Structures are given as structure tokens and as C-alpha cells.
Image (cartoon, rainbow, N blue to C red; front, side, top):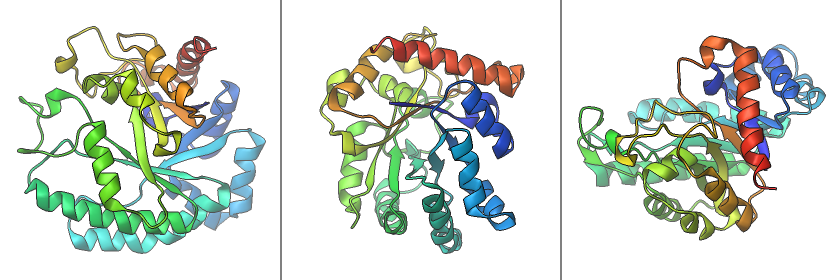
Length: 286
């Protein structure tokens, strides 16, 4: 598996050259990155020069976030879709093969109508991405606190676990067969999923992986925005990663945490601590 740096964890992405240098300095094999910045640099210089930045730092362009607002009205979706082919070509040119988005666990609209709309829009997106050799990862969002109580956003449950996400992927029925899971250890834990659930998957069903940890509180009281670095909390990461290893997943694994404390240390120190955490957890798999 390839350890990856995620900009959210360190407080946002610094300029690409600095970001890639940090990833190289602390031994990450890849990065999550913003495709918009890469496209802009490609226009100002060339995509060959941008790719050379990745190559010089021996860092893979592991995954980028979906640059399409698919949750809103049709006009906004259509506008963003017009720009997707160019961005997909940009990703293809630098060797990036994974694009991801997350699914809301609750919606304010009719969940059946929203699901049908989501299915159709994701099929459009997956087709464009697949035309350029890019896989499309969908992340379920698991915390119970997002579906109940004051933190709940929306009135109707949508998709928040592995089975429902797999059902949506089957219904999307992408002509390229390029839609799969973004498996996040925090969401795996908060939905009560097990190592057996991961072992039931085929490696090709997993597009990308996020790893993080949870504070010592009951599972149904976990807060999405309060996550720890790998190895600092109560998630059985050995079971999560061990299951991935068992089924033969060898793709990127990015650390994704949300906190104020880590970014406050600055990009360099935050990257160093992030690297130490994932390297320690990964070493336990050997």
C-alpha cells in the first residue's frame, strides 16, 4: 500500500512545489491534491513540467477530489460537467487515476428522488472519467451523530454504510466499470463494520482509502470533525488494514484527520507527525 499525504490533515494545501517537497521529505509515496491548481499550472507552464514536479519528488498524484458540484441544481451540475473533460485530460496527462467524492448521510429532499438523480449524475461523471482511464470512488459517511440529534443535516436518511454504497454503485452501472468505494477507517468504525465486511470485498471494488483514528468515546457519540492521527485512538486499524492487505489491495492510503491542533503546528511539523503516525501503523502489518 502507498502512504499518502492529504492537505486537509495539515491545514490546507500549500503551493504544489512545496507540497510535493513535504511529501517527499517525510516519505509519503503519494498525495491527494487539487486538480484545479494542476490544470492552472499546466496552462501557465505545461503539463509535462507539472508531471516532472511529481516525478522529481518521487511522489504519485494518487487522488483528487471531484471538481463537480453534483448535489445542487441541474444548471450548476451542467456548468461543472462542461469543464470535467479538460480536468480529466489533465489528470490523465500527469498519471492520476483516482477521483473521489463523499455521499451525504442525510438529505432534505425526497431520498428516492435524490438517489435517482445521484445515480444518473454519477453515471455521467463516471463515463467522462472512465474515458480518460480514471476510477471514481464514493465515500460513505458513517457517524450516527450526523443522522440524529443537533448535528443531523437533513430530514431523511440517505446512504451511510458499505451495503448501501455498493447498491448505488451497482445501479450506476458505469459503462467503464470504474466506480468503487473510498473506504475510510473512521466511517468503517462508526457504522459498526468489521474486518469481515472488508474481506468480503474484491480489491478492484476499492478505489481509494483514508485512515484516521477516533477518540475514546462510544461509537454512536463520535463526531465527524473530531478525528485523531492513526494509532492515537480506539479504532482497530490493524484489523482494517489487515483486511485490505488480505484481499490484495495495494493502492493509496491517505491520512485524513480534522483538527485545529495539528494544522496549528505548520505544514512541516504537521506533515512530519502525520508521516510518523501512518508509518508506525503500517509497520505493524509486516
